[in-house]
Image 1: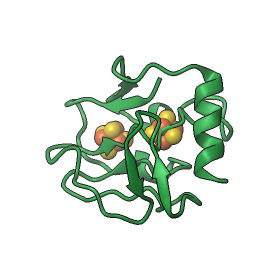
Image 2 (image 1 turned 180 degrees about the vertical axis):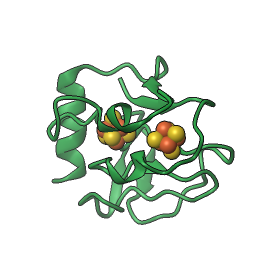
Image 3 (image 1 turned 60 degrees about the horizontal axis):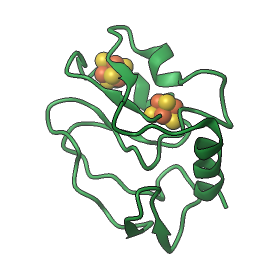
Image 4 (image 1 turned 90 degrees about the vertical axis):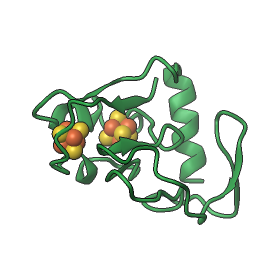
Length: 115
Ligand code: SF4
Ligand code: SF4
């Protein structure tokens, strides 16, 4: 299950630096799959969408920091716990019920991002 950022976010920016996949972006900033990962060329996201790893994609939020579900591995393969949840002082990082994934799926996502 990917983590998401709720509207409790005060945009302090702390979590962005804790994410091993650079899955967290400031509101309004465009995101790329390749930033902070080894993804390159044409890449298929877990939902079946195909994108270029270097393409700049529209921001998913303009009001708060946001998490790209296709890059969030819930920190599997790096840490025991989601580092954004650990770092956020206002508990704005919470599990997303839109992206339910098993540990095996999260590890497979991590492996594909660093293949
Ligand atoms: S989610 Fe939490 S740690 Fe991240 S920017 Fe918002 S308030 Fe800061
Ligand atoms: S759970 Fe880990 S991989 Fe996902 S956004 Fe938070 S810090 Fe990044």
